[in-house]
Image: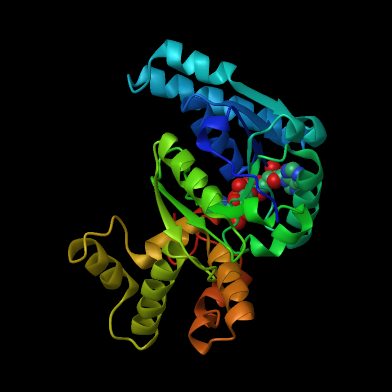
Length: 292
Ligand SMILES: NC(=O)c1ccc[n+]([C@@H]2O[C@H](COP(=O)([O-])OP(=O)(O)OC[C@H]3O[C@@H](n4cnc5c(N)ncnc54)[C@H](O)[C@@H]3O)[C@@H](O)[C@H]2O)c1
């Protein structure tokens, strides 16, 4: 491998790939933290939508007195939107990939980034289910590749899981952790790739228990949700949370985890699968465990 030691002080321009739910907000987080930021997507429409949504969000925050109007304008001025990955990568000091969750897409992006981004640039993926080792070799700089996993909504949620793979260098880990802090986040370090990282594993364990209690008729889903809120101080119960995240997403994560671990405890839940098959995806479809 190389002798390149990326450092936080070398970071001026951040490239975020993907202008969807996560990428758009991660871009604004970076711009609000003072970084020149490029958001790249293959879809002009997604870029236009992201730009409009972020402007509206800034305006709302100014109206609520949470943000100074001048700071909002400065942050917007630091954001560029483009479909041109080659040019964007050439000017980036740090890349956060938040494109569609498909290994083939991410593999192609990371191979291109390996060729186009400056040598000192760290290449991070926001993937929820794919460890960065799956795309690291394609870059030719595996030591500068890691996961940097934000939570939805990225503007609000404080946690960032930084996950190293066996070849990730210490300088890469240190720089990614420090960048997350400069973004105003509270990063945590995960020393080894594991499906679900930490947060989704904790959430999965609670969900599994809640589903088992409900299936066995021990208590209703309403009472299980109430217990999580009133006894444990959770902001919402596990069934409410599943509806918020989307039951299709819950099912997809379980399938990906089970495919990787083969562990019986990770097997996708048949009750969730049945709801998905019936088109009941949670809040976004108007019906899930509950009706909205
Ligand atoms: N949604 C969540 O709650 C959440 C939370 C944490 C992490 N993630 C992860 O973030 C990533 C993005 O998820 P999302 O929910 O924002 O998805 P999304 O579907 O909202 O957005 C994905 C975007 O990627 C774009 N895209 C597809 N192929 C591309 C390519 N080759 N180059 C550039 N852009 C491309 C799409 O046009 C789309 O705009 C995934 O890896 C996901 O696992 C999602």
